Every structure is written in structure tokens, then in C-alpha cells.
Amino acid sequence: MPQPPFCPSFVSRLAVCSWSLRPTDPADLANELRELGILRAQLDLDPLRENPAVWGDLPAVLADAGIEVVSGMFRTVGEDYTSLESIRRSGGLVPDATWDANWANLQVTVRNACRLAIPIVMTHAGFLPHEPSDPAFAKLLGRMRQVARLFADHGLTLCCETGQESAAGLVSFLDHLAEPNVAVNFDPANMLLYNNGDPIAALRSIGHRVKSCHLKDATVTPTPGSWGEEVPIGSGQVDWAAFFTTLAELDYRGFLCFEREAGAARSGDIAAGRDYLTNLLLTKA
Image 1: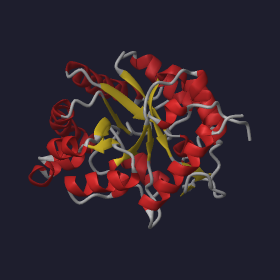
Image 2: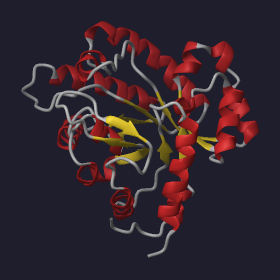
Image 3: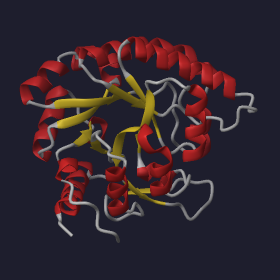
Image 4: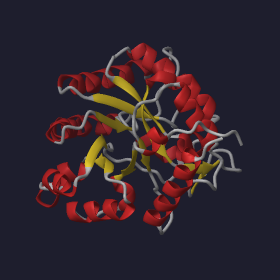
């Protein structure tokens, strides 16, 4: 395995995806982050919209705890991750049946992001069509443009998360979209989970469009058409040395957010991943 560059600046930009900790309220989230010793979060914005009675004091609680919100995330209505086929049908901005509800939710989401002074918000846009000749291409391009301009009006960058299409397909779609505030949240594990190509080659292909990253590991499925397996960092097929080397070559300046969406000991897995990657990044060749 190649040795990554000695890069303490990456360690200083570690964060945690709030939903990985499954917090019950703002105080619980703050306590979990303090216990991990990582006082930065990529924040799930949906609870603020869905349950303001519980989550309304989140900005004050995080500020009192000295926790920085570095970016946000929102889901779309009706997402079904039971299988690759179910998420292809139900995910993102693709389904006609949920578009109006998603658009209405986004009016609240952008206001909450502004209230928290979050500069970047990410989502899975859905399985984006690769070719302009696809009948769905113009429709999805129009919906993404509408969302992108809503975000731009509020001074926000919208990041599409990787995985549901190849790197080449994502780059092609974003080239056609041509909205300057649309970027990429790169998740190396998702490239493996969706079996959409080598994560490092994908990172190089997407390049400077990457403005946010997830830290997650996975293995490719042995059964075509099914999910890969998410595993603790260091036990999967992500080449972390090559990943950080490539980020350094790209002069990546964003945050690196631990995400864990499987397993019974998620906080423990994140802590172990923090130790594994910190050791990797702070070891001189």
C-alpha cells in the first residue's frame, strides 16, 4: 500500500455525519460528538424540518458545546434502500410522484441551512441519466437546475453524493447542468456499494468538483445486481493511502466526514476509524 503524504491538516478537518450517531435530540448529538473528540458535524437537516419542537434549539446547543456544523444533508421523500432496484425507482429527484413534496421541503431546508450558517448541503440526487438522448435527461436536468438556483439564491453550494452513477456519468451530467454552485460530495465506499467503479479512479476523474467527502469503507458484492457490504474503516476495499494521496494532489480544502450506516456499534466503529486514519495521516514516510 502506498504511503499517503504526511498531512496533519486532514486530521484537523475530520467531522462526523450526525445521522450515523442516531441522536434523539440536540443534547444527545452534542454529547456523542464530545465523546468522540470530534467537534465538527455534517448535519442531517431533516429533523429540524420534521420535528422543530425537539430540534429547534439545535443551533444554541451546538454553539454552547463548541461544535461546528461544517455542512448539511437532506433526504428526499419516499427513498427505499431495500434493494438497488427499489432505490433506483424511489430515490432523489427522479420520481414524479414525490417531486412536489420534495420541492416544498426544500423551501424549509434552505432556510434552516442559512439559520445554521451552513455553506454546503449534500444529497443523493437519484440515478441520473447518462445520455442527453435519454427521455428522462431533460426532466432531471430541469429539476436539478431549479434546486441549484434555489440554493444559489440562499448562498449555498449543493453537493451531489457519488455512487448511484459512474464518475464519468456524473461528470457528464454536471457538465450539461453547468450551474456554478453544484459540486460533489465524494464517498469512496458508495462507489463500491453500488459497484460503479474504482473509488480512486473516480476521485481523479471528478477532481476539483469535490467539495466535501465522506469517510466510509465497503466491499464490492460478489452477486451482480445486489448491494455491496459497508464495513468498518480499514477492513474494506478502499485504498486509504491512495485516497488521501489523491486528495492532496487535488489540493482538497474541504472537510472529511465519518459516516457509518451499518452495524450495531456505530460510535465505536467511527472511533476506531478515527484512530486508524489519524495514524495513517500522521505517520512520516
